[in-house]
Image (cartoon, rainbow over all chains, first blue to last red; front, side, top):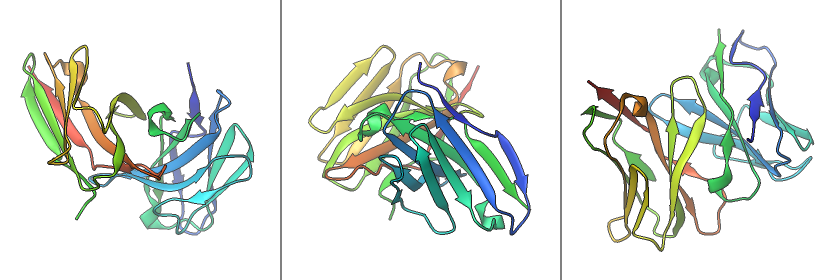
Length: 113
Length: 111
């Protein structure tokens, strides 16, 4: 089975802190994605990557950056966390560019105080 | 307006059928998907349908696609308490790899 793991299930940070959210997949997938999920808003794509060292902006990249130094790992970085970044963050990976093969991690619930 | 719309809540009795509806606005959508999210978990792909299909059935799940009305539905037969979850509709448009998700429908199954 494909496994997508995220470094933390719950995280509490203070406004202005630098925050790293890590995601690792074990199936040699080319593509990795970061979403945020907010009640009543569904999932919104922040960034995605189709290859090592490659990144593309999603719908809501402002306030975030990403890093893909190794194929299996995709990091989401909040340079200076703000309270409006309190959310559930979901990582996903896929072999193809089609959505049908996306596998999601369990999510990281981030609270910014 | 939103690109993909779903009602936020649906309540059904155990053993009844559930029908979760979704509307989308882009006629160029190539793939349409249903995902399930259980409490505290990530999303799990339930099923998908190509835009050139009208119906897809998989055990208790039936997906119907009405391209004229841009309407997608997911029917769950014999709904069980384990089906309680949030169900997301999503689409991929022709020429794009970025999915658009609906807001999710919370399905509540009561005895």
